[in-house]
Image (cartoon, rainbow, N blue to C red; front, side):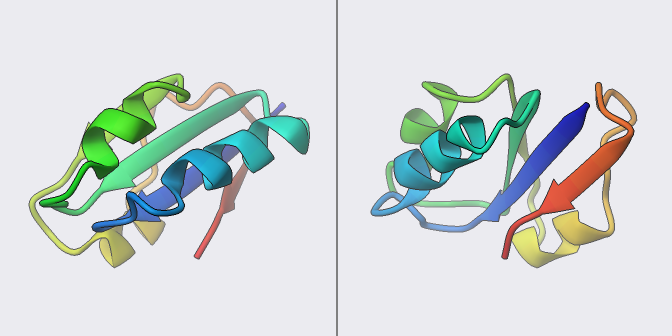
Length: 79
């Protein structure tokens, strides 16, 4: 199984497309880790993901923070 983890901060313009492409590519689960967006990223991301996490720190830190609840043996981080 493959998990796709998408770090995000104020990505309302592209988050739905990114999530959709992850599913289209065959992901078994898609997670969005938000670093404190102030736009509509939160609402848009929650519509298409299995899991949504909000961090108070910069979303780039999510690349070293991998949720222990992943379904997959392989985790793919987007940039």
